[in-house]
Length: 195
Image: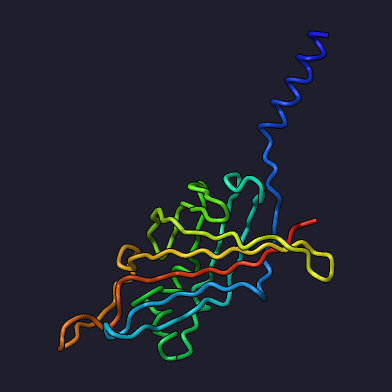
């Protein structure tokens, strides 16, 4: 009897140490990577990146076990102005020819409170890697009309572009600078469970 209980206990311990996080694939048609930055101090310019991938694991009942690695192709930047987009791809900003990707790799999920939590990880832009934290909202899980299980998240953060060697600017005669240093990032992800 004692031997049987020991075996059962060992099995339970083994399962307790096994991650139950499911793998999910990006539904790119319903996802976006956007940013907002100040222009001329008083205005805001919005942009997005059209080419990105995400490798994500999570368990909706244990969000702390989740992980994400997201890669963005910086040449896909789009601010609805081709001349400005070319400037953003240039060495003045992203230098897309030398540093073609931005990468975020999570290190921990923490401060979970209901459907809200934080993800801290390493963000690499150009030749700089720094730790950043995203505020994330888990928007739920649902089955679509074709029998696929879908999940969605909204993640936001703000970074100082100067910290990542994205330094170009011009001083205005009236004071201030042409382009703000703070960049607000908003990521909307819709995912499909890998069967």
